[in-house]
Length: 176
Length: 448
Image (cartoon, rainbow over all chains, first blue to last red):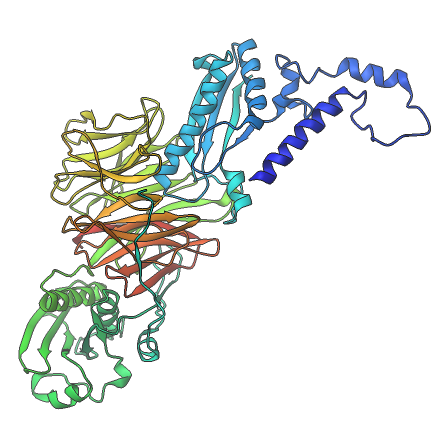
């Protein structure tokens, strides 16, 4: 589980860093020849600002938090962990600025424990994400919580890594 | 702290080689047309203090050739699985008497057998089906304890054998047998786009599986009506969970609950007039009771916690359910008329999905500690756990209607299988469908 957080944190930092660069392919090594300026400037103007969460193009922009749709949880817990609050905030900002946007918050659990209890747990996780999004401006009418419990795992091995991947809420846009 | 565990864990390593040799057998079933699967039965462990009994192979007097030639094996297998009997291997029988006159009781005493069953199969006068004629003797007193004829339809010989086992069980223990009953369970086969879920009904020993309903979306939580004619279950076929009630014989079905949020965990009242279920229409899982005749719904619990997996006590006085209102999932109970729920399980980190023994004094639960989930029985009076299974991901316990065994779901590698464990933990038997993932057994209360 810790690994996943660290990885995610590293990815967030990496994204923040690459966002400041002029091209996405910049290698952090000193290059003898300076990169040609004019073409990259054209690209930066065309690309959306990844931090602009009201820009619908960022929903598919891998550099933007808006392109991330999965929130992971600790075992038997439904607290949105600090490292995932940025993703939730981005989607809340998007929903707040697009009144036509609709999302389903699909809650899931790992295989441990009973199936019906895990249905409840998945729903509780979905509710936790919904509450956070509401607090940041998304309307209640824009969000629906669904729970699949442990019935739709993304990973099928009985180990800590797989379990951490399966304890999640997926933010699914039914309208943008 | 209430998390200290004083549980007793029964070890399964005490099986003698003799018991193993006698009872490890594999039966390959002619797969039913509905479920293309083969079923294996394997004895995992044994109970050395069980009643020694000999089931002599039945004499075949029927007009047609025998469709199965293992009546005695079916009966022995049933009795063995209960943990209370130690049936003799037919290979060790020195003689095979067919009537009372030909029994030499001294020989059977030397073979250390306490009880002896002899029988035959013949065609009834009307030519339909089979008549099973059998007698049970006490080897020491030479007393005839049972003399009975059971008539079954054509193709029902396995069922007939289960009826004979039930008669023996009742005669020698005073408790009705539960071998001629049915179980329901869920299977998941295939991967990706071919993933398919089925609700299956079979004999209590896993034979004769028949698919009741199939779906590409998850099915879960099968629950029998008390008359054994209908099954309630949860289906995701409409995207969200919904409770359906289906007639097993006709296949007709009705939607019981399909509103917003969770619609789950159906459980019938003992009289069949009400159904308890979990609904999260308020945004949080609560227990509700539905009047089946009118559809009227009453909310039973009201708490921010997850309240789910309701199940009725056999006398109908309580509804047991799982709740994490104390911080972690535990079993609570409340009167079906309402009131303040009281906590039932007092030990352990995770106790969920209760199945209540017919005597109402014991409950089987999925008992979790760390990453290990086992089936355990909580004795309500002595407030003690007995752990029945070795884990590590055991769940969905379901008591036999006579309380002698508990059926449950366990894992072998990445595959789910069903096992039966005797209520004293001494005998475990695995029922495997060779295809797919098998889970969530539910034992019907009625003799088929």
